[in-house]
Length: 333
Ligand code: TYM
Image (tube, protein in one colour):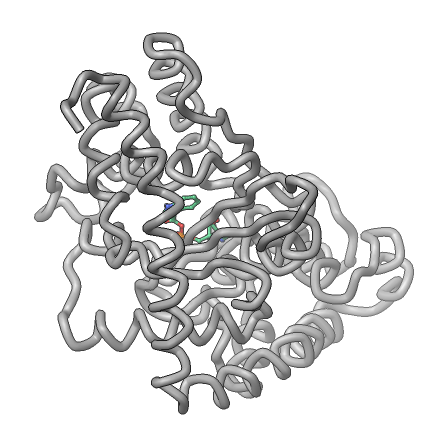
């Protein structure tokens, strides 16, 4: 992390609620890995965010450790990047409170994720679900991040983060860096294999809609073979062919082939062949990640050593931002 030349700062986070999905990987985590060479990267497991929906304590503890190992298995290298657990770094909750007093009720009411989640969890529309984007803004602004690699579904939250930062800076001078979202061209919105009008999500009621990073090869193949397509039986990217468009995007993301190359390669072939090819390409892509995961998850002591070290550094870096913000607001430090 200590370079003579000042590099731009990247920050991103993922909720450790259940296993990581192919959507998380293609939309975000893959870029986290790629950006490590060029940027000072800071990544977090956003465990505080997960309790906006009900969690079972023992399962939650397991999910956090599994997610930590999974993200490392994807290629986040703790020698190059900071990778910590959000709840261990107390500045996140602190800055979230401060920023909540600079965020308007109306702004939070417009967040589509809040509307979706409150419809889905109608029995638990808690205040945390509503103020969730403020905690996310705090996550990002604490580290003076320049770029935030995320999938397209987080775009609105990044825009709100920018608005909050600009408002605060407008009042108190330059306290926060105004960050930019970094959304990939391909893979920004991986859709459900069972309903390609909805994003792929671990909370999908239909288990075949969502591919998990740690699914067995057989499960992955089954999910792709059952993917919903259309009746045209022609592999081409076109409006109205959401299922095929989604499969083509996934195939392109894991093989590096362009849509033209894919259309050419599958010219005259049916959807059955194509689905098998996509499944196999995903299995191959995930194989080394699964192997690394199986190694890492066995060594809990090593994982703990990694996150404790990162937690400490993240606390130090982020404390500077909180102190600066508090001083500007008028607190006696
Ligand atoms: P989360 O945990 O839902 O998702 C983690 C990342 O995966 C991306 N993603 C997808 N990308 C493409 N296709 C999909 N189907 C798909 N599903 C998820 C998300 O866009 C995200 O980048 N609020 C965040 C976590 C967070 C965060 C932050 C992110 C907390 N603090 C600060 C960035 C910066 C979330 O719930 O992501």
